[in-house]
Image (cartoon, rainbow, N blue to C red; front, side, top):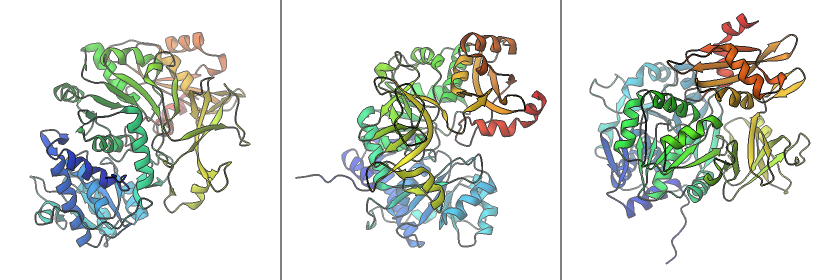
Length: 524
């Protein structure tokens, strides 16, 4: 008997539930849910959504913390034939209103403690139906109790009419420089990248994945999808707000996979300097969303002695595009490797020609994992989905600048709009950041360019020093002088207690520039 390949994301959930019905799918705090329980909840929600008018292709927004309801609701929306729009729980009123209006969401799934944000928006959108989970403190007036609605709903799946080319998700970019863009992903694109990631990471039924990354964030979302794909367990935390609690949970649950971003690694290494951390059960360690500073790697090996480190690169428009074989993590510490299985990466110059080894080029991505486009933005879509050399095909122009070595492995240089042009030279922020990270007292650093009448742009470093450590601006400039060309040495160094982050916990040069404007004015 030939087993059909899954064509819809929800088919993977049903396959794992059939094989491992009583295996734990989700651990969120004290709550544990089996695959059968997740499936039953998703089916009930799908019937409830359809009863409220959701039809194939309709958008349903999920505005929740990292809860089991949030994770299970993603599959409920898909089972209803809908398109899920996951929204970070830290999103403020104006951005929430924009996303709900832009996506034409029919229904909003949320939690009572977030009513302070969505209540006003719902009044502005009378056609929007809000379904709220119930909390001990009560349900806000005027909103339906989702838990009561689901009690009498069937646990069998509704009839499926979607095909693999249908939209599955609208994933909104962070929007630090204007309105966010809705990235359109189909079942096909998400299933393809999921299988590609599974091929090189090799998760199994016995794995226990840990994530504190928000589920609206591609990297966080794929921790859940990857767990379901393998029939494994996802240990989900809301955030890293209470690090000691998170570290205890990781060891207590004997997690085998840890997904992280550089800012969290910085936090862990700072904590380890005061109180030793040790995670011997972790066998797979992944980094994405931002370049991992080389100086972190030795410390990471100490914290995770039995883990293989996978450095990866991607963006919302294709989820993932490159990974480095962990055997090369020490010999090529600045590389993010080569294309994920089944895809191709090209480095091209401004005229569309392949660049030579060692030269900087823009990264272009080919493969079924590339987004369909930006929701309602055909002009923006046309800027990044460009014709390839093969007739009738389009590829993604990533906007990321890279170099490539003789083996074809890639080295991130900068986002094309983040390159600093100072004294007529091009400065890579990442290169300056790596030099500053070589100082053990540095917890985090972001380098950006600021307007300068003489230089065009002046290199500016925003630095956070580890608690209890002493570090001067002169020491920072000295190490830069030792490691960098003269034109790359920061003209301005600002010592800060913390750096602002996006809603997804990522550092953003543009956001830092916006929020530190008064300090920058003093520099001039």
